[in-house]
Image (cartoon, rainbow, N blue to C red; front, side, top):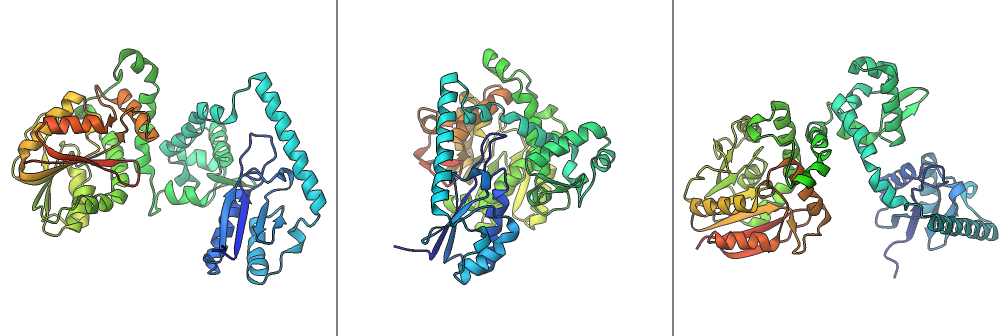
Length: 453
């Protein structure tokens, strides 16, 4: 079976610093250029490009091999890619200056690299050296902190179309020495490119981190920066059993609220249409979006179901943000905002659908049961409750994101956590809901659904 005429494997293995590898020699840009050029020439249905691990030619990378004929290339640069695609993929003529044609020499080099790798692995095992993947996890905060600091400073906007360290420091009001150190670190992470002392944003940094870009994620990512201080208290939180540096919602700054809601809005905007379709609200006239934040889900439901009217319940500091998004969506006549506290207020009555997204993980088990009881009262007979959240398996060790997110709630709330499907089912049943079920969706969240008899 040959669903593709050609299958191209590109080594993109990252090895420890100082160890020769294709990634250190620029395989990622080659891989990106190949995929882009194959698409540009309309060859996606004929040529499959696949990222792979080491081919054993580490000193001569980036390396790639083209099957079915088994043509090996070494030392490929992005500038070589158009020629390879045109000459080899389209015309059937491999680019001779890049082809490894000495089969015996190729085999010998691969075997020698394999022996060195095995010997190094045995030596590390004998010495009890920490495995690279485990060490990378432990030190992963360093890369994260460098990027978060750059976002807090709005460094990528300062770099703009290109700037020296001194120019960036002047724009940021920062010290030139430390600014250059940060810029160099970001260049090592391939978020910046340094050419003759001038720094330039990578395509990803320009798209996602710089002001003026349509896809600028910086406002939302500042919420992650705000989490840094809380996560630094994790050890004390584990000892204490709860957050040790927690702020009440009413005490949070306007900047914190803006960043938090921006992060939630960015996450929700992509997922909301999928959730709205999965829930199915064709027969629902009134919906209550409890703690609806930016209004992304209410907006998606209203767009999906033209007969639906939605009320968003959230705090006074959030309401103006929600109203802004509703106004931009042109749905002020069908989506409204009501100020209230989901932890204690009555929720209303006569709703056909009550929706809670990313709410329950903020509350304790007792808080969730109390909320579900009030949701039950707010629903008309036959109405439904829909909970979207990170839902753990019964033993609470998977999915990984949900298990780690439980720690995020530990450091940031009094009693919040990630909860399992059996826990949600128990609370919903105790609150009077029937036909309780777990609807699994693509992605990191799922749905728990129930109906009021």
